[in-house]
Image (cartoon, rainbow, N blue to C red):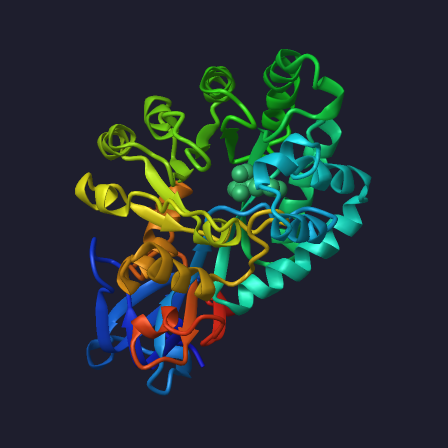
Length: 403
Ligand code: NIG
Ligand code: FE
């Protein structure tokens, strides 16, 4: 049957997330799709035209597909031994300084073949998709030499092509100083600037560049040099900032025109205000906060005060957040950070899109945007965040097609 639309979802309720605050609820709504894009959205009773296929929501809720805007999900190896060590009293920083942590995952990732990494990444992505994810950002940063970094980024791109989800890649060469440069860290910074960044840019393998700006990783001055070089190559930047201490990372992200500053537990009001003025999105990662048993939560009240958009993500990685469930992240954001369920849902839709520079095309149910949806067995959108460990996602739709 021919129709004005390829498909329509109707018979339920929509959380469009199209408003700056709240869910943008349309009860008894309908969303129509043509050529993979949203062609119409509104009250079902008002829908014009006919659709070739109709999907009955049976009273359920439909939201934009979720956007996991900060992950490290391409990696090999396990960090379960470090989990035990921390339970015996060691801290994340101590383990990192003793050559474990990121470097332990680096060793396993360097050794793994591209196919092995891809299989591992597929398994993690499958769990994200089951929780409503249609777009995922994936960082390199466990290769820490040119070939291994390129390998990670290729795996991330291939994952997206093979599974049909949208993958946004980020080059995170500045994640840790690898052992071969431990006595000359400046040589590694120069390697990033002179060789890695140009290669990554030339091969089109990264959509953005990130750095871990922290006392156990890279200084603000090193970060500035790397980000200036990235910007010269036309790449956007984003920053792991103020997670373990306040190095002024939020303000640095604002100064350098970053898309986002991520973690931010220790960000000062000065940093938050600078982010507000510069329009830098905060990416909050309650999974890492929980898993490391941090006690200082990010300054949510200051972010509200200074109008900083708050995105949420899994931070999926072996060391600090082995989590592949966005509904769990929503719950943690509410429970641990006292965000409202509406703020949390905005954090994984419209603000997740903003953190990736994709808000024009993703993150809300609006005409002209990609037809990426998640369908939920809930009585109200707040229930998506309600029960820790529950997954109420019934279906994940990408470009109008079930994933
Ligand atoms: O976002 N903070 C740096 N990167 C990751 C952790 C990496 C690791 O420990 O493997 C994070 O928490
Ligand atoms: Fe991270």
